[in-house]
Image (cartoon, rainbow, N blue to C red; front, side, top):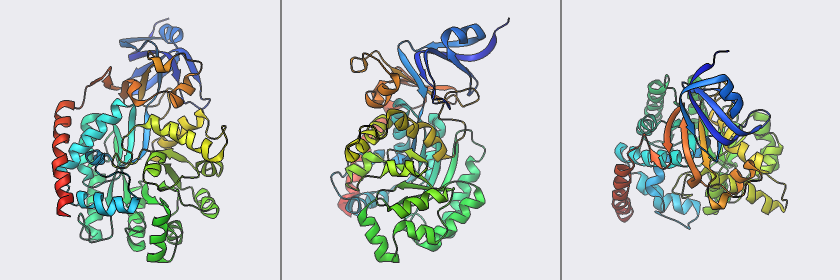
Length: 442
């Protein structure tokens, strides 16, 4: 019997597939042809069936799907640590907004390159972004080889970035046109929050999302002070504003969902709205704790995200997984809450659904080859009883030894192949002076 031909075979001591059965294969291998997975199985079986022009033996490693970050503002890496230990609204209005008002495309692209490099080295292969000058973010994403759903953020008009709604919609349509045929980049419509926009603009923006057939994402119910502001401005809670304007749909993606009632959880569930859980950002900003188990029990699709590096202060999805699991166990006093498998689902298959991606998040034939390897030859990862447990409770982003996205090796054994790390690092250091000067002028 002649062997089937593929481009690459990757070997590992185990493969966490995240397929329908959540299969884990010991001494496994993955065959890749072009940008897709052709086969996965035990090493002996793959070697019997396939021959490859290139093989990559990752030794004592766990192979698994790349992490998918369901909520971030990737250029905010430039503001990492600029303002810490502050309440959300103080942090936003006194520090972040004054800095952001002076951003230009060059700075946004620099921050995006830095963020993409950090995520690639940490095993993230796709993310949902929301920021300004998203065409510049798209350039960084295109060059780095990662995947992204880009969201051009907007506030109540006029704002520092858009004087009118028409101008904003035009930019978003242009962004959609630019990336509509891109293999790794698509867009979403991205109002900032209920309290920083108004219902008419939200409705108009949803109409645009429907016209372009893209997701519609918004920060919502992030904290009690946000709810109070929204009540003061509109006489309604944030989710009530969305409900009363027909904005809770299967297209809707909500970030945070910390301050929610039982009734609102039912509303989210019946509408098909999805939620992004961002535990570390919520904790650091003192926003509260999302009732994650209640959302999942209600059948709501929940993805996992880091939020921006200005409020986290990193883009480490492994930390996020661990925090999501431990936090629920602690507040519910229930060690069975959010088991390891559920935590990994949040960061892979669920987040893929959240981004609207049907061809990533698991390792099985026909899926895109978005694969990472975890180097298990480290003291803090020995011994191994259960690879799944280790990935959630022991592994960190620094343990990622290989990142492949769309069949292309982006990172291997500490070396980036698509990002000029030295230049990006040097330029990022220079951005500190600029950011601090913005705060002095404020």
